[in-house]
Amino acid sequence: MHRWLAVLLVASLAGTAFPADVSDERGSAATGVLEHHGGGGRSGMFVVPSLTFERARNLHLDPAFHADVAGPVYAQPLYWRAPGSNKALLLVATEQNFVYALDAATGAVVWRTSLGAPMPHAALPCGNIDPLGITGTPVIDERSQTLYVGALVKGQTAATHKIFALSLKDGTALSGWPLDVEAELTASGKSFRSTVQNQRGALTIVHDTLYVPYGGHFGDCGDYHGWVVGASLQRPHAIHAWSTRARGGGIWAPGGIASDGLSIYAVTGNTFGARSWADGEAVIRLGLDLSFSGKPQDFFAPSDWQELDTTDSDLGGTGALPLSLPGAKPAELVLALGKDGKAYLLDRENLGGVGGSVLAKKVSSSPIRTAPASFSSGNEIRVAFQGGGVGCPDGSSGDLTVIAIAAAAPPTLRVAWCAAENGRGSPIVTTTDGKANPIVWAVGAEGDNRLHGFRGDTGTVVFSGGGPGNAMSQVRRFQTLIAAGDRLYIAGDQHVYAFAF
Image 1 (tube, rainbow, N blue to C red):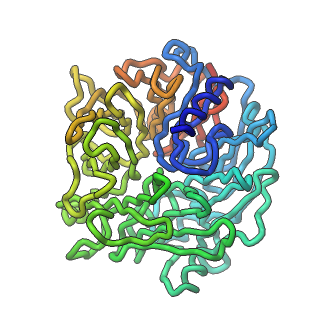
Image 2 (cartoon, rainbow, N blue to C red):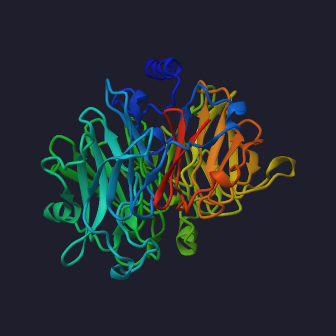
């Protein structure tokens, strides 16, 4: 609680934007946006003291910001300011395997590092990204001022998944890195094939360990599995790993794995040929050493997991979302959203095993595949996600849905409002103090490619993309924006955009 109050106080004094997710213990979030959706809890809620409902209407592209990058961008940008510095960096990673550090005020390149040639689509057995390089959102360790990145690199004979550690000062590689994931796991007696594995989920750091999730390519080709690889920040070659027993079960959601600081939560996709449950279609709680008990309190799978396997209706389209709801029984929760359009609310103390959710409810008429964002609203927690709402109130409709989870015994869940984001972007939320002026922001990725903003309490439009002067180039599916330094930043193909107000 004290760290939460400290973040709000710093944000209020500085008049700038900070992530409100403080689930890990790596230090204050006041130095920037260090990982996907602001922290290991993946809340996607940012405190921006000056961004009220009224000021949001004046949002516009910052004419002083110009940033060009090479290649499509699927990974979320990160934002970091060195202690004592008045210059912040915007970190952007592309499918061309370039990592850029941009001046967050102007967009000028401070440094650029190439991690090696990406893999062309023609050289892979399946997939839908061309070329394939960096897809998962990197993570910053501010203690060592290091950026950790997962990349698929074209080798002399085959593709190689590597994990890089780059100095935030100049982009140079740290000693002992990169790690060749396949070589490291093979040396420990495990079978990991880089060609059929894909790294599209966000990385995270808990205490002194970096966690990297892996799944398969679009098309589900080859003998891939869902993997979580853990690497020590002090001894990088001291790695450990967990993988699904059955073929498949990829961990591929853009938010990757979540953490409450005590455990990590991975959500797996469909498996192949499993006659009994073998880790697919599930929320899996892993210890920080990646141990898995296999007991019902440490996993959840829907009772119809075999049907979900057969119909490719992955539970793993979104990552797990840890929630705390005072007054509810249970109060410590995990939310999972599936391609079957259902919301599964779980007791964090006892995930429930097969069929053991606190509640399961159809909330979307379309598959849910993006990263959700959560925020408080009275005695409710609200969660925004991209998907066509079911049972939208007042005749509303659209491809952006907000559900409300109310404190009760057990908690209840309803669709609060629906609106049109006109695309497939992952939403975030801004508030002025952690609760007031909640605004749900989303990009119409691979749709109208425009930014949209809605009041979190009512769904009323506060920003509708603006005129021709606010147009953006192609923004890739599942892309999410960030709020930092009184700007909203969005990465698109070849360009990064800064919206000011």
